[in-house]
Length: 314
Image (cartoon, rainbow, N blue to C red):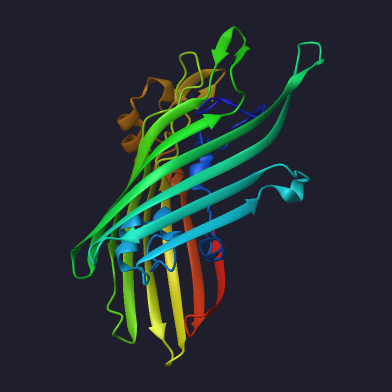
């Protein structure tokens, strides 16, 4: 069940809502406290540290500092009583003059301990599931207020190690992917300015855990804006809004085990599944709209030293 994607089941339950379920979903988990507080918005924010590499590498050209390092640790699912899962993120960047930036980041997700059992329920040992992605970044200013950026990453998902399950040799899933971002930086000399950002995130190959099945990764299209207004010499207020579309095939509609609407993801090519995801929902446009997420946030800064943030995610 752990590897089921686009089918009938998720953890043994029917995927009645036909929710797109990609592999390696940790690639979309918010790694930093700033954007987490802003409802997971960030593609159009002016970066304040190296975490900007995750949200939009193109924006790093407009970072205030010439270099920076950021590290974060997020306990995962603690409210459910789990104490061995966490998300870790480490990122750093360096400006090469005024118009170019290079960066490196590592995203690590520890899924905790899994206890293997035999068909009779006897213990067959433990395994610690883990996933990670290593990304290299490059961004360049093309015009005074406009830049483009790129992340290239290697992804490794080791869920159960090297096991034989139902006569299929299971292995860690690996692939490569990239992000392409664009950023427009507002005129900060004005009292009120707008930023605009866009990015296609995790554009890459499918993941295989063994056998013939392959699974789409969470390719995501981000589009956002941020309005910043100065309320005085020491006060600054930013409103930000992101729209996201997960570019993963919508699971088809089944009746008695037969597909009666939509397409079988197993028969789609990687690019066909990604770009066809804008119009593949069995119930049409209304169902496509349900696959959009919205993030909105507000951020107040005092003298660029102290910040208060609030956000909403839908």
